[in-house]
Each structure stands twice: as C-alpha cells, then as structure tokens.
Amino acid sequence: MLKILGRSSSINVRKVLWACAELGIEYQREDWGNGFKSTHSPEFLALNPNAMVPVIQDEDFVLWESNTIIRYLARAYRGESLYPAAPKIRAGIDRWIDWQAADLNPAWSYVFSALVRHNPEHPDPERIKAAAASWADKMSILEGQLKATGAFVAGPAFTLADIPIGLSVNRWFSTPLQRPDLPAVSAYYERLSLRPAFIAHGRNGQP
Image (cartoon, rainbow, N blue to C red; front, side):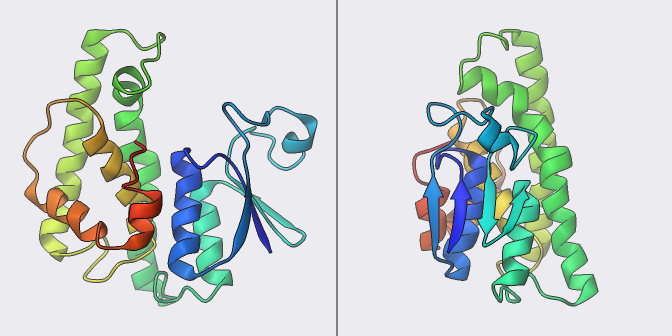
C-alpha cells in the first residue's frame, strides 16, 4: 500500500491527500514534521535530504516534491482524466502547476507567515503590505484565466492543476487581509467546494 510521510496540516501533504482522494488510492499516512517525528532524523533524511514533507513510498519507490508526487500518482494510478497524456493538454496543466510553485507561492509566503503563522521573523509592515500587493497581482492573473475558462484553471474540466491552485486559493481566503474583488476566483472556490475531496483536504478549516 502507498505510504505518505507528512503531517496532514501541511499544504503540500494535502496536495497528495487530495490527489489520492480524487484517484481512489488507498494509503497509509505517518505524521512527520512540525510537532511530530523529526524530518531531520537520519531515517527521514535517507528518504529526502531536503528534510521536508511530503515523501511517498510506493513499494520500493521513494519520491519527494509534492507537485512531482501528484503527477506520478496520476500516471501510476490511472489518472488520465485528471492528467491526460495528449502533449498539448498536459502542457497546459503543467504550466499552471509550475506557476503555482514558481510564481504564486513566493507571492504569499511572507504575508501568510506574518498574518497567519505570526512568525516573529516576519514583522515588517511595509514588507507585509508589499507582499499582499504582489499576492493580489498574481491572483488577478488567476482571475483572468478563470474568466477565460469559465470553470477550472486549465479548461472546462477539473484537472491535476486545480489541486495546487485550489489549495492556494483556500489560503488566499483564509488569510486576514484586504482582498480585491475577484468574482471568478470566488466562483471557482465555491465550484471546488462541491468536491468532497476538496472539503476533506482543502477547505477544511486549515489555511
């Protein structure tokens, strides 16, 4: 059985849990990370030298990096409906998965850490203001894409790209800051909320 190493409150672990729920994959999960078993232990570092969750073990195969994991799961567990093999369709999905990691995540990192995690290392109000503006700029890009598709981030159907993007949208609405009116993003959030897997692993009270 697939084994997932990582605490369920981690946004990156939740990507994997949500993907498993969508794909009907049975798994066992072990708590690792903040407040649980240390990811800096030799046992964990042998699996992931970055000391970060999630890690999966699929029989004798070990994999880390959450977006890589969900792509692997879709390919290994008959997830063609979420991650079609057609090169142009798959590229469109990959584009938004990579955008979430490379552009959207860095935009919210400082402000989320300051306003939700109350990290004492992120006290600068000017940086919080600048980060909030940067985050809003990136969300306006998502707004434009969702207006164009009228449904999900990569097109009319739910795909693998909606998992990392959906979790970031949940974080957007969970952070106490002034947000611009983005009606397509709001409608998308409600559309995702019709999916039981998103309620379980996304819109579940955890930012």
